[in-house]
Length: 258
Image (cartoon, rainbow, N blue to C red; front, side, top):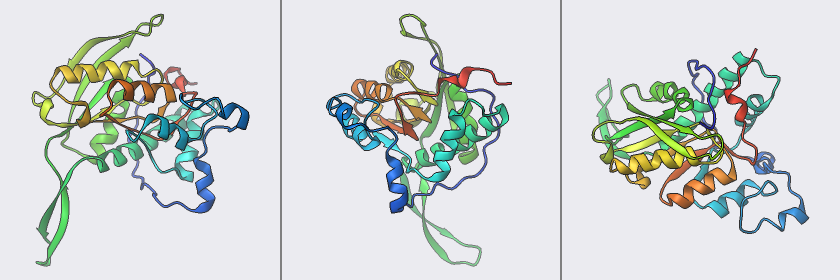
C-alpha cells in the first residue's frame, strides 16, 4: 500500500474560505519555478511547473481546493518532520474535513421547499438520494469519520489493496460495497496519491461492480502530478479532488511518531 495515516481523531468543524485576494493569488504557485527548467516541461507534469500548469496538462478532472492561509498552514504542519503525533493527527483531520466538505459540493442536489417553525415557506436544496463513500483500506479509513460527521447516515464500503514493493503492482484482497453501488455516486477516499496504482485498481473493481468512472469523486489530501495523470489517463471521466499537487508526496504518514 502506498501510505497509511496514523490514528484517527474526531474532526473539527471548519469553513472552506473560497474568497481570494491579490495577495493570496501568488500563493497558488506551489512549485519553485525556474525558467530554463520550466521550458522542458511542455507535455509532462514536473516539479518546475505551477499548479495551473499541472491542471492544464492533466485536465478539468483535477480539482484543487481554493488555497488560503488556513490550508497552507495545515499542509505545512503535516509535512514538517518535527510535528508531534498529536498535532499531526489533529491537522490531518482538519484537512480531511475540508476536502470532504468540498467533495459534497460535487454531488447532485435538487431544489425543495420546506416550512419554517413560523409557518413561512423556504426555497432550499437537498442531496439527491444514492450517494455513498468507499474507503481504500487502511489509510482511506482515516477519512471515514470526516464523511460521517457531514453525512451521518451515509453508507460506506471498503476495499483492501496491497502493492508489491518491487513491482508496484496492486492486488485486491477484500472488497465490500452496498449491493446497489452501480446506481450510486461514490466518494472514493484515499489520502495520498503517489503512483496512482492503488486507486486505479480500486476503480477497476468498482467498474466490475457496474459503477462508471464518471460517478466517482476521488477525495485526496495530497497528490503527485504523476499519480493524478496516471489515474486520469486510465479513467478520463473520473473527478479528482485534492488540496495540493506536488512532486514530493508526504509518504511519512505511515511512520510512527514519538
